[in-house]
Length: 68
Image 1: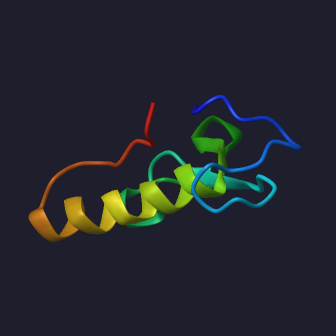
Image 2: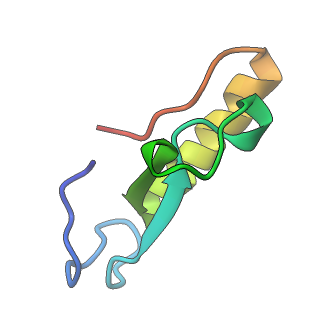
């Protein structure tokens, strides 16, 4: 999503980029483990998505999307 590739150095952490498999729609909102609901995100995007989800859930809003 942000354009980093394996081997890049993350601008925020200054470490080699790591990738995570994240859910587009969380289990709490009815999402499952189907391939169509999975997305590959760098550590920074993954963490941002988790934080955004917390904010939206506490505010009663919809699903989170990673930074673009």
